[in-house]
Image (cartoon, rainbow, N blue to C red; front, top):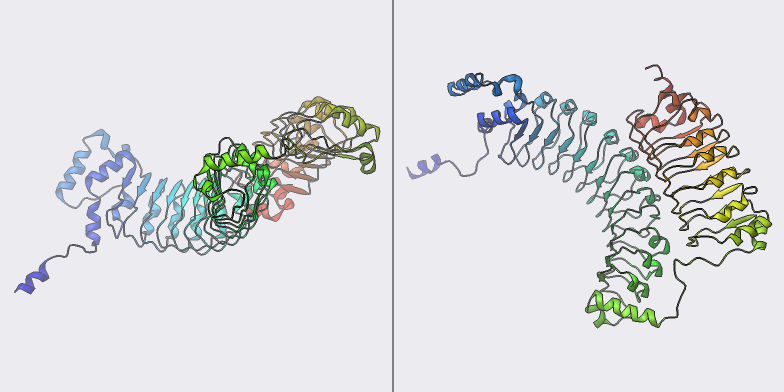
Length: 602
């Protein structure tokens, strides 16, 4: 008898039945959903989604008389009339025990936010493709290992979280989700990322951490809006070569990989934090120090670093530097010149120039010791001092060039240009300096210079006197701070190649359309939004063979661009337009121009 009574006692924990799940969606919740368009069923222990969820914006049949009376009473109130109901816009089914999702999800065509995180989903129905208005989708912490092809029709998605699942690869059509701004693919088993990921040019945050990635596709540098990149805890041995193209990136998390060398970050002027701990780095180079003016946090612990460049002093904003457990025998005294440095970690290094007790006393004591060391050293030239190591006339005469690249210059004496004129120099290279204006002395060379390189400086404007260079056929002013070009440059009718890449241009300046002999125009990496392909715009450049407009903010490619058949090399990847699709872009110039021509009459 006792055992019979025990058998009749219902266990405290039991799997919910379907009818119990249906009861979770009560009339109060339904009425609230009709008013707000939001339904929250998070953490309800659901094993099934109540059937009425899929038709909540339509007619619902209540089962008992009380519910029926409730429906009749509703009709007496204007606010509850069916035509005042909100369609379901946001649905939260997170933290339940869902294993499958009904194909009836296709009924929720107005859904903009869907949260299915923290369930036990192993697959999604193909009917997901009907949710064309979805902007936010959370599928994290499930058991998914693939997505249906129809999923990639969700081209309004801004936020997609696929973290903490079982994906081993990324479907190549993931690159069709061109509106994505925040993408979390962390904590999976990914071994590779498909080429074409760079088409996601609106991404501001990309999280690929805690996977098994051995490399990243090079076109990841096309994500010109990227602010935060998290690739920590993978098997990466290197970073893409042109990381400097990520000009808006502020946070780089790449610790716990196998990276042995940092590529050039020249151009990443917005970087505030770099985390490269537990890799295989051996040095902090001059080039690394010269390109990161906003860097505040640099984490390099657990590497194999044996030396640090004295030019680390150029990281003027640095407040935290972690060099724990490396192979440093000495620290550069220039560290003491970093006025914002408040956290310096150097424990676990075989330092020979700083006593262990000083290290144990912390940052302030270490910096004091380095200051004393610097004072006792022989004075050295200021790092930003104007270079006095200029080439003499004989050297310039031999090469017919004036090469002052990489000399930290803020100006150039007029005497240097006068010497160059006397020996008939035709090529001038002032790249990779700190020029904020074009030196006036260059004006004296206007009748002899054929090639001029002013790239990678701090130029915000160009002087009108450049329009007087009567023989010039090549100008490189890339990687500066230019927002426009002077109209007078349109007089340069001898110019054949112009490089204005990586500036701050929002349009192609009108002066370019007057350079009728131009053959190569490189304008990638700006903020260009609109292209003028008319007869007074690009259409006026009858000799234009190469046009690079990649990595800009172009919303629409004008169909009449397809009429410019003289263009043999057209580069437009990394922009915001949705058509032509990346499959056409990958086929090359001929296919792109043909596609555009076919749409002229539309």
